[in-house]
Image (cartoon, rainbow, N blue to C red; front, side, top):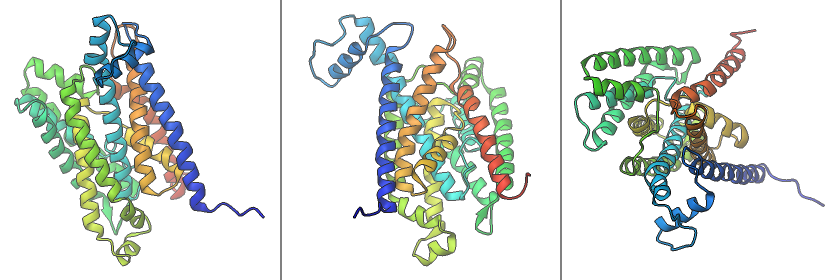
Length: 353
């Protein structure tokens, strides 16, 4: 007699299949992104350059120093930055949705990215750079302030209404845009051009020194989020049930909010405003895996990285000789997805026929 497959075994199987699929997509996206550009580079050159960087001698190492320099100085840092920023935004989105209990919560939608952008722009204009550390620090402060404001205003009676969340996001975005306009007014020409292009989101000119700031924050932030996964699962059962099961709900939410601000702030500081990654990726992963947060957070990190690598590839190749803003491309994809989610939420609440 064949025993029926348990629900836990089915979830584990779906997790394995999805992880394998995401891994293949990620590897393919990285390889295609590395070989594609104005300078044609073969996959063998890419592999040889990576092995050489790891200290492994091989016949695949590029003979042309221009190819080697292009990979090590231009393409590899940009690809790793795309992976790190995409993963950070996706994990931040998953955490926000857990904290607010709402699938529409996302750093770009509710104003967290705009708050981080205001802090980073202030650092740029007033020269608080410290090799990118000052920009990242003020971006974190701005993102934290915006997240705390959303949390204080949008939640009532232990839950977050969709309309209240969106209205709060609109208000914070408007305030942040006014602050950005004032900062731009104070800026010199060079800083103004840098901020305007950076507001649209871009990975162009990514440096290894910047990657080394983003990666540790991503690793630590994701590790801390995974440590909170079990408590987030209990929180999904409701605040009262979570408290009865020993969860300090307010402490958990504050810690999650700090993590959201940290991950969003470091992403915005070096890549600008890139919206909807934290909305689209966790929602699709949740549909495939279910609500358990450990698998959701890990898969969201991989999926977010893969999505941004693919998006960055399109920004470099859609228009010959031009580098499109990546935030524009993610908005074109995420906007319709957001409207679909909003329509679904309103139908559930009886708002639309």
